[in-house]
Length: 352
Image 1 (spheres, rainbow, N blue to C red):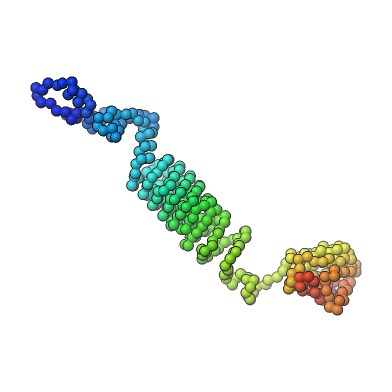
Image 2 (tube, rainbow, N blue to C red; image 1 turned 120 degrees about the vertical axis):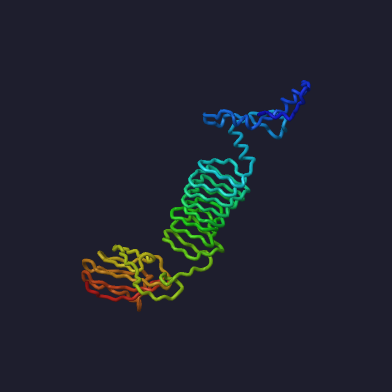
């Protein structure tokens, strides 16, 4: 069986010239049988191993050139187009032009850089994507159940659908699909019409025209609504709506310090008690609010101590009440303020 095809034939009795011999060697093609009948390599093929490759750009007459396995694979992946690639194991892809579907169950993709391509479906169950960098890439369905995207860097990376339950750390980009996150942190922009965030943390939530259908959270910081209005249920007190309470609402009673001059900071001490241990004067209270009411319970300590009042305190008939004497006896003063003065009345002589 012939194992070489030269493209040159001879008739019996012909004289073979030098030109004929040159044609034989210059047009020599190796049959597949020559390769298949060779002894198989037992050693592992390394990236530096070399092959002889005939470059088709040089035509059939071109001599074979040596190339390493590394360069052969790199050039193939860089210049080739693969409509449906089935890949597994640990992958590091320097440049991926178009990939229809990437199904990865346990492998690791080091860096996936796509500037103008489209990834139709990115699905990972336990894999790790170290860096996802995109310029104008759109991923229509990103379903990552247990995987981790350590860094998502994108200027216009819009994920319109899919479910993410891992960790998202992103300073830019828009996610308008479904986020189910128990421990994830998202610090970028979330525009979501149907998304759900379980117990994750959002660094900043800015919404100008969006709608949050149901916001349930344990709020440790501040919730600011700069424009628009907030509608709450009957279990929350609303400042501009009349409501009927079915449980007690009260002020926390605080204690003022007895002394020659007695300070009263009204914003944090709306209902206060004062046990006199010496004669004293009530100084001008701070934080008076127009229309607010305040209460002060004054109890005699040992002895018959007296209490004077700053001029901002006003009593009926301009007559300052005299404290009841006797250890443990209390007088109660109730005030209404106009923001400048404290208008008060006294209820006195409550026994201990």
